[in-house]
Length: 558
Image 1 (cartoon, rainbow, N blue to C red):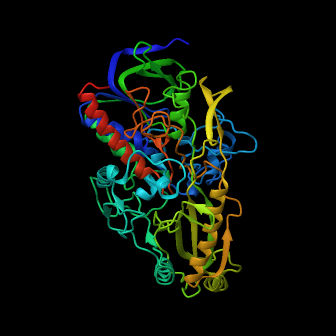
Image 2: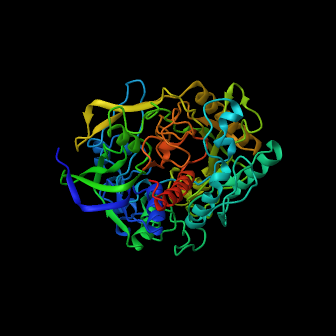
Image 3: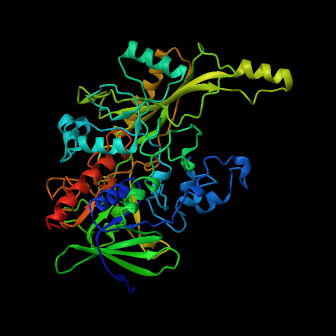
């Protein structure tokens, strides 16, 4: 296949991927004076494409389009993929991957400018040294080659820019962020918070979320319209499209290449360094190449690793043999629900569509290494609200009476548990399958270990105990079967950090041990996953790596 060079341009850096991490790399590098090409496999999107104020009755299929599942059998499983925005998600027929029959994996992907930052859950939590040094705590796996002190100033930089609303709690296992004012809890959530603290000594806090509660950095405060997954015309939640990428474009030093499906990295055979990126134009299928002195992969965990595996026999930057291994995701979709009979679900109580819930930080194995035969821990995301019985029988006055009598105040807690980094959870190139652009696809091997399953079951039982402590009735466990790996959309690992080149792909600054001008700053570089949502930490890692790139580039060491 002939590669068509993109003129004579040689950029200072190429960034592959335009999501949360790619946006940060583009912003930092361009603002430091570097000329950057940002490649995105999907198309451009503007606020005209946002549909958060479009009601189902305004859609052709009233929100139930049959076309979604036909072309997106995997993507349609996720709540955020809807009739109004499904075109942001990949076409699974054009973008296949394979798994063993007994190891399903749901790979949720978006190809659009801004990537998954357009529909992410926005939950934003710092990690602590309980996470970065987990191996020292309980003896399993490897410590990260960085610690909390290394990342703390970058957490602060990201938080001050992004805007994280939340409540300080002073917990060592969940360090506080630089917060905007917290969102309000509902009556039921306050009942749970007070009871769990008094009876069990555990903290229930409002979710820490990348949604503004007051005007911030030129963006408006959230007006609680609800479906953030469909866009935000007021820019009140954080997405790279209208924040970091906008800033990078404002420098005049960013070249944006959309509809650019990256196939592999181009390597200078004389130096062994990355010379550029080869890509296929999504619509024309024309093969092209863009060159640069530094390459930064932010394409998302598995896509970055796929690019590396397709860039050289056995994978580029893989002298350690670890590339593709130690894949992780959070195990979830289990917990407990109940009713708070002491609260009345009055018909006039209609809370706003708060784009957030409550959070219960990890309490298992914080001061010890193991509990009930498992290591590590879990956290909870939850909610409590009135549930109105609008499906009650009757009409007129009888219907109104039935609604009043049958409505109730409900409460629920769902767990997110840590997955251990295991060699046998890995990805490789499938020699027999290619995508619509002729690029070999991934074969993904992952399942849950006994440790994850023990954490999961313990978390379900503890959820029920906390609801009982709050006085809930009719408590029911849910999630007899946990989530399929990948479905939490928190996949990390496969190109992990290590101070020892024999144990990992990149160093503590996300620089490839084998290719000094190559950096992988998305979730692929993770050593362990903790139990917190990962995006805030991904952005902080990228900001730190970007400062390192800027410094070394100025010193001509790349």
